[in-house]
Length: 276
Image (tube, rainbow, N blue to C red; front, side, top):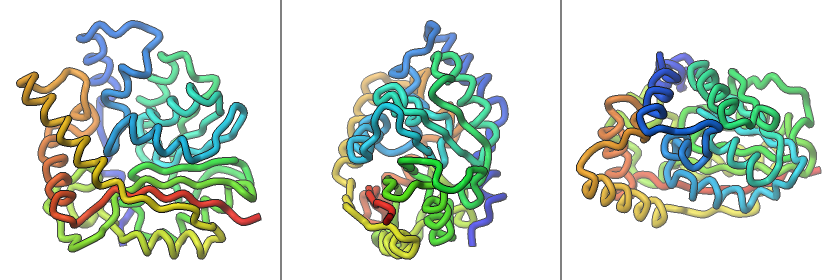
């Protein structure tokens, strides 16, 4: 069983906001902050902004929708959803460091009226029943062992008929990975599971699974482009995922890509709807 204290330890990042603001200053980022600039480091998942857009297209979010971002991190997807759909987005993340930095960036992007990030556990959410029209999580389930409890808690806070979107790295082969990876420094922090575990959890909580898509091909193309850009620039960009993942960012990504290429893992997108 993955302990949340171990997960929190992995994502703890002291002086995160200071590092980000120093990097923004180096590139001369103007205020209000532009979401495209932020996307260089605040879309902390395979495929970045393109993957967020692909998931959003399936979630039926419209102006006025109340949306929940589970494991929101710095709030990149939350800000994108709010900006492009006019929705009100609440993010929840275990890491106080991410929430503090994310709310600061939201304010500097002049989006505090639409986006609020809060610190807390997705297994015990500080929300009343039937609060949200849509919920989603992007690269979160790999840290949550009790997926039935997670699905039940999402079902509790969603309105009947609400949509739940998932984009997670899942086990599709031998899950004996080389660590560190982006979501875990070691096996004690990883709760990598096969798609069947998600399906069972969702249906057990009253969800009807509408679609399931293996996005491995997209992921491999994404990482190939990333490597080509790095080789061309011959150096680490000022704004990049290393701001979030720290000095081992390259090794974490390399280990994940090796597992993806080896057929051990796959990024899988699932869309489910809560029964009325």
